[in-house]
Length: 154
Image 1 (spheres, rainbow, N blue to C red):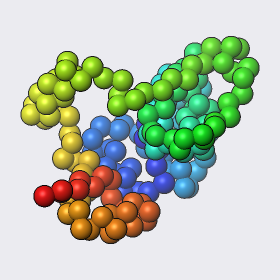
Image 2: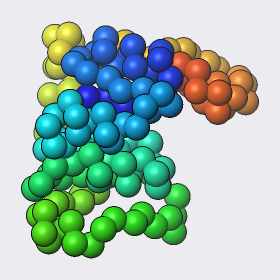
Image 3: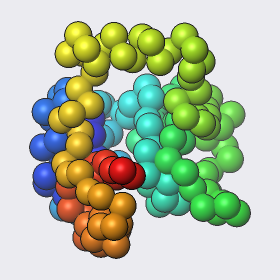
Image 4: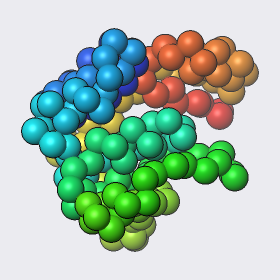
């Protein structure tokens, strides 16, 4: 289940394998996820680094569920979770730096997956810009235009 506030990003998510999507600008994402799953998800991944979405990911996980924070939160930012849910519902909160990967083992595997068409990176890239267009790239990001932008440093 992919959650976003823009329709084009939800379409991108569907194109790379999301079976269900929720537009968080149009509905309560946590309530929608609980309804779709009859109680919450086993794993919730927060990927943008916002306090509100970290707390939503936690709330979307079920009894015994795990919330993984992938997005880079600002230094010093704190999230609030109900303490009783940690022990009464046996929920877990976990961080993930760079996918918690073992680079020497995982990178060759990712390359093989990409070459075999199982890791759809090209579909996640919405634009390419040169370094001298960085301000336009930031403006696109602020306006929530596109999925991911690749910056060409040459």
